[in-house]
Image: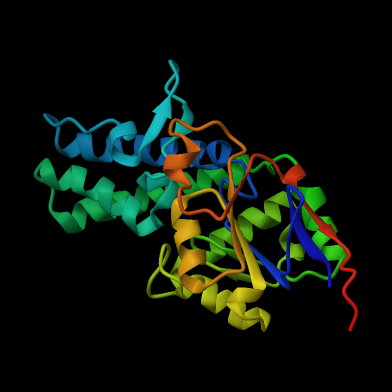
Length: 264
């Protein structure tokens, strides 16, 4: 069985689980486009009804950073967009309409309709790009017989779609989205479910992610190693937003598989 090598340190694992956004694919390209579209559509619906109202900036709502043109350039790794579920994000938006006097049910309907429009816009653009080194690492794991899975705060169907857009769906034996568990990250249920479907124990898998909720999930489940990925520069220091990682890496070049010399 190959060993996972991380900066010359060896880990015995039989499987690898990945977060999706910010771990396999570029977070800003995908969720920057989607969040700006959702916010724009929701704002127009709410302000058509609450004409005297003001909606908080998207940066305050979801923990995003924007450039002079208003496009997302960075995000808080501890913020709602990075760590929250789709339901969390819609609830944050719906609160904006509710505080302006719109009934909660109507404000939530606006949020859901706006999500549908954002999803349709994203379907046309498909702004998914793999992070540097991802494809080569996935091929290496696949070629050496390491089963892989996805554990994501996204909905399972959406995760399936994004992986198809990237052309990497075939590498993963299991995908567990937030909709398949009662308690999402940082609770261990998602990782435990993925391990069960892979036929492995949690202490036989490595977990790779880009948020501390990933690390907390892996640690609480007893993963063999939790690997914090820091490919993109962040507004917070890595010590802050990945403080529970067992190992920190800045690129997939720091990860590789090595044939085990153990016999028997």
